[in-house]
Image (cartoon, rainbow, N blue to C red; front, side, top):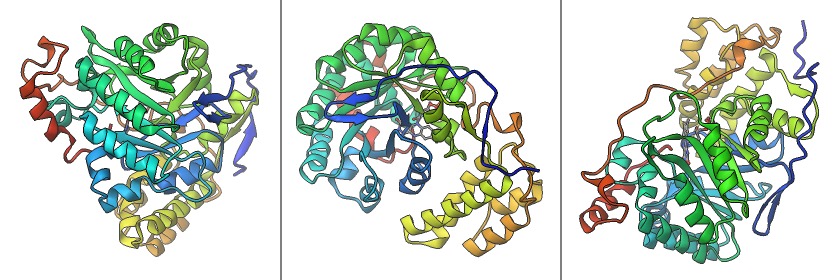
Length: 394
Ligand SMILES: Cc1cc2nc3c(=O)[nH]c(=O)nc-3n(C[C@H](O)[C@H](O)[C@H](O)COP(=O)(O)O)c2cc1C
């Protein structure tokens, strides 16, 4: 039985002829972006992904206020390995002053080569105060944050990442995309879901195509439901986007970036790891996390969620899975991994398809009267301050 990590598929490769992605002075040869994911896209995971393919690898989001306060966790989030280039970070903020300060700090201290602004967070405790994906509804606030960030960033390209809007009746992406373009962003990324959809259903790629058409003068990046290189090719063909942003599809599969690069180069080469390769990667990931957090127990707590993603669809018994989901140390992890059938090959379809967060639509939680006006009221401004406290996830 083969445990080869790669194989050549017999599919006819599509020829896309996608150009490198130009973000201001940056050129990203492979127009693929690792989506920022809180608790996932830290330095360790980015390193594993980078080893497989080119692209832009974005940090977890950091809140503007926490960054300005130089909280250790925020500084960890925006830290890059010396060989990581370009250095991309994502900032989340709800007011122009704090976002401006955070961007200025990053620029003055040369801490990044690219800054993405997060306007997609669907977490109820954030949106019920008007933050995250509720924010672009207030056009004055959105414009102020974007223009301040672009101004303070100087030569560093700024991009925005957003959702379609609040729900089908309250879409914001076309207005927000045009405003962001007018304020000088280098690109716009659209997750083809509304706040109401959360992670449910399917991403609306037609909306992504409409945004591509509406903004002929800047790159538009498409995001949502890319779980394979073939999905990425389909998205480009369907929408005409200049690049793709991939989130859940790479959870437990850093090699997806190898597949994406191959597909965009017209090659049929795909990574199809057997159990041994996956087990080795899990262990290495845990070692990297231990190093990043400077704490083995924390590294092992962090690897637990990844383990279920890594072994999705692989022949791993329930008992071993349960033990790995509580693994206390690197030595214990090694011992558990050694109990796997390391010669088992790539299982095929069971590994592929959707993975990660899904769920059902959720009624949007918004401040009272939020939808009555697209201009921010004074009371709403006060409420927003609390939207930035204690956030994680997008
Ligand atoms: C665990 C998790 C954490 C996320 N954290 C962030 C974040 O920090 N910033 C952000 O803009 N989006 C965040 N997202 C949203 C993703 O970047 C992406 O837009 C979304 O998952 C849709 O893309 P996908 O279908 O490729 O997963 C997160 C998503 C997940 C699943």
